[in-house]
Each structure stands twice: as C-alpha cells, then as structure tokens.
Image 1 (cartoon, rainbow, N blue to C red):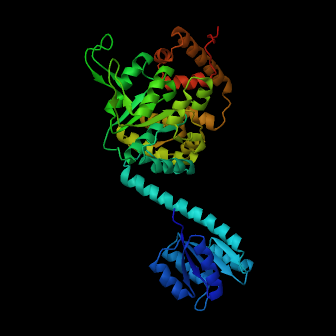
Image 2 (spheres, rainbow, N blue to C red):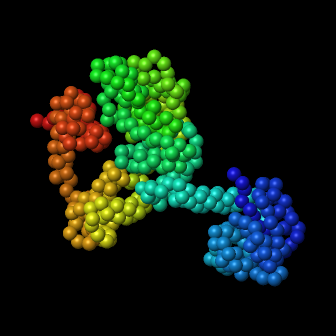
Image 3 (cartoon, helix red, strand yellow):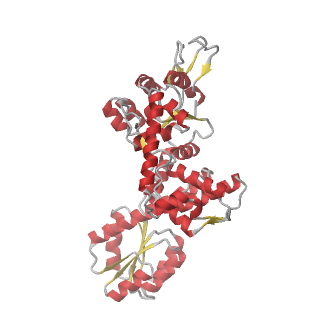
Length: 454
C-alpha cells in the first residue's frame, strides 16, 4: 500500500531538510514549505494526508494556518511542532483540530511512531470510504445494514476477497446474517452475472444429497427416469453455497474434496468426469475444528474450504447496529403489510437494544414484523413487546420461565424419541425449523440418552 503524503511547514531550512530526508527514506511522499502562503498553495495543489506544522511562521502563526487547512480538508491530520511548548499552546492546538503536539528538539523515533499511528487511522478512514462507495455502487441490496466496527471488519474482508476465487467459510451463530454476507460476496465478484446456487445440506436427506449435488444419469437408481444435472453443474461459472457444511456425511465429504481439487464432478451412474468452473462458499454454525478433532469432519476438506474464514459476530456483540436494523425492518414491514408505523417509542427502543437476541438478526426481524402487524397505534411501544420488556427490565419471572422451559425441554425430548432422534422429523412434529431445533437442543443440553420428564 502507498504511504501517505506529508507536508512539512517549517521556516528553519535545516530542520525542514532533516525531517524531509528522514520521511522520504521511510517511503513517504513529502512536500516542503517555509511559510504559510507557500504551504496553502502547495496544499491546494497536491494531496497531503498529514501536515507537520511549525507553530511560528514568518507570515502567520501555526494555529491560524491549522484552521485554514481544516477548512479546506477537515480529514487532514495535523501535527503541531513548536520550540515554545506550553500547556496553553497544546490545548489550543488540539482544540483547533491538531492530532498531535510535539516540542523541539523533536525525538525522531517518537515522531515516526506517532506518524505510523496516524497513518493507520488514515488508512482505516480511506478504506471505509472506499468500502462504502463500493457497496453503494456495486451492491445495491439494502440488507447489509451496520455501523459497528465488527461488521465493518466483516464487510472490509468481503470486499477484499470478492474478486478472488478463493474458497471460504462463513461462520457464525444461526440468524446472524451469513446468507446476506454470501449475497454480498457474489454481487461484488466477477461471477455476479452467473448463477448463485444455494444448497442447505442439513435440509436434504443424506440419501439424496449426493444426487442433488452431482446429478445423476438415467437409470442410475430406481426412479431415475431421465438425466438430471446437479447443483454443481447448474452453478457452472458462478458460485455454489453449501450451507450447514458440517452436516455432510464423511463419504460425501471425500467426493466434495475431489471436486475442489480436480474441479470436476461425476454424476451418479455416470462413466466420465464433467469439468465445472465453480467458486465454493460454505457456511456453518458449528465449530469445524472441533468436528475435525472428533473425526466427524475431514481435516483435508476443512483446510481446502477454510482459505478465508469470515466470522459474522452475534448481534449481542454489536448492539450499535440494532437502531439501524430497527429502522430498516420497520420500513420493510410497513411496505409489506401496508402499514404506516412512524417509529418506536424511546422505551421500546431501549427494550430492543438491551435484549440479547439468542436468534440474532433473524429474531430481531421477526420481533419487528410481529410488532408492525399487531400494534394499534402509529408507534411501536414497549407494550407491543411484553416478553422482551419483562426481560429487559429484569422482571422476576424466572419461576414461570423455568416451568415453561422445563415443559419445552420435555416436549423436544419426546419428539426426538418418537422420531428415533432424526432431527428433521422431530422439527416437523414440533413445528420448528431444523436450525431452531438444533439451537434448543444445545440450549437445554439434550443428549441422545435423555428421556421426557415424568
């Protein structure tokens, strides 16, 4: 990455030459001026992210010049330098917008350290601006809503890898928005004009998953009356998304590894390989490293997939995103349900910000939609969020909650036992999604030997 540009404004020629030589040796682009007029002329003609500014100049004082520089470009970082250090001068410079205040004689090591810190901040601001422009211009979906630093790191990583063909794993708890991240990667990639094929590996029975992924020839098995292309063929030149990759059985994992290595698949019942040009992105809410240690996930496949790992943080760790998400979902469901809810009361917002969201963004979205549908007024109030309000205010309903949770745990165990511990069947019986069932199994520490209470 190119080093930032630094303008040295110093009337002492020896000092200016010393600093200029040092900074050029460090790789910086350097401009030099001996007075305020020369500095402004140079500053308006060239780009300088940092200005080293002497407090006393022949034609003006550094404080006045600092204010002029900030008027031209508020983002410029200014380091004030003076031979007449005082607390009053330092406070005045910092109040006027200086980043640092140094006294002569300058400790050159200290100067370089401070410049590197300012440079890192400048790169972050520049990257954020480029990122925002990229997302606005090339990723038109409004679904990627955030203001937290953690999600900035996620979006920055996405922009950097989108144009590559690297395989990657998007990991995080259920409901954090892994599919939104996937859509963003595909939309920013060179493959955006080609298919994005999504496969939920947990939702397809093991006996059918191979034929879904790789297709089959006519007569490959009973009921195969004609040739069918698999998901990998359908995704040719595009992207295939393997959601819940941790649910793929070991035998099929070895075949998937071959696809990644050889870039070819073979249909069930087929006799020759078929080349495919596909980018593979996987997602999981499991700890695949732990699955590797347990022997339920192939280590070589894990490392083939995990070239880049994008970890999407849970909503409870980025609560500063909640206000933006609230406004986004409120607008979305006002349109969907033909409502005109104008906003949320302060109390309702406070409740929603304080809640921890075990179901993450998906749970927040469901809460907002329910409130939009049920509220009678033109604002969502805490009365429209009764259960959340009680939790956020620390209501002492643990006894009732404990009873309800105990009953729910027993119902889940009973459904699992009746379904021979096949989670797909148990989830259907309970009217839950398979992911939600897995969440509740983990929440209640249910193991296969468990039996319903009573």
